[in-house]
Length: 502
Image 1: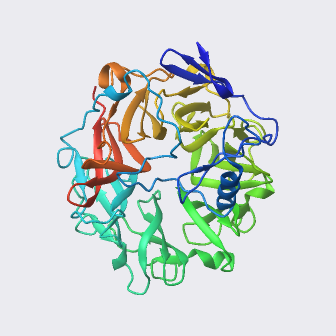
Image 2: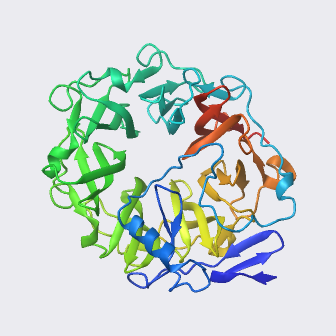
Image 3: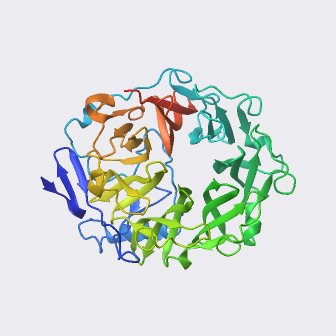
């Protein structure tokens, strides 16, 4: 047995790392490991983590960039780029690393396992960047993406990968067709409410304001929303201060946003009528630094934990103190207070070096699955850990410890489905799908005998490339759908279906 830094143990081909049950109060100073959204690099304070050989000039420059750069939750990837931060070291030569098997593609989905939107064009922005499983229409899915470089779209598909023509008659809504006044070249996020409406946040490039659109289930604007035009300008609620809204979720009749106001993290809640929820925070706005001083970011879309009558807003955060940073999972009440019974005073602080990409909830098993990477000594290692709904490590999953994967990379998506953990990750020059048992062991019935396999193109070869953290599982069809693009003669927005039937 070999022991690595930060309590990582290697047992044969299996790596594990211990997590503390919780940090007392706010976390102590920790090495700053902060992804930079412009470059994909990481800024690390080597004075607090002496074994990381980062020259002082580079460290200072990266830290200054990180101070002014908001977080992102997706990768912007060219076939010749890696999916995560490059290092000066060569990948570790794990036995069998270059002999990975192919993950099976479900050729009964769409066109031999690939759903394409539009025709190929030489523009790297052409991609599907979000997949949303509809709760209102079973076995239907919404896709968010960009075509022709400047045409953001929403598509609704059937379970077999065909466009649903009951949605705007074609299955597609090009957002540039919603208004001839505004300049929409992209949009940030989408969500579905309990009545099947689709909510979209888009940035108008003429003014730089964020608009929230509400579409009916048939794909047409809901003209009862806003000023009888189907949208509202979110900046109005902040007196046009420096506001950025990242992602959002819906709960009953509310829309819950994560974002930043004048570079400080916030949560913001609107009712379905498009007015702030007065009972949340102060006039619908919760300044997170009032709860956790020095908190820098609230990242990604909030998610709703529901057990009986207990409902909590779960978010993941990044805390800074001087040059230190650490990631955490926090639980809040519907009024905007930290749930003091969750973890340690409302927040579970991850171990230093752990970088959270996202998390998923399973209300049936009452488990939170957290995924991403561990950054140590210039190396990214894919990691998963699980919490129960009280914010404590789930003991049945690797005895409450982090599970690390023995190939450099990161897990982009991971969720519980049919009694297994299913997901995918990015590994230097390829993407791999994986399936774990709920005890933390690889499920070797998937792509036997490994439990994981390649499903993307390799290197700069033609084929499918994932370019975001967005995926979903189709339990009845036993498929993992991953968003991205296919590169052949050009770039085409694409979804690929990985078969989980093994």
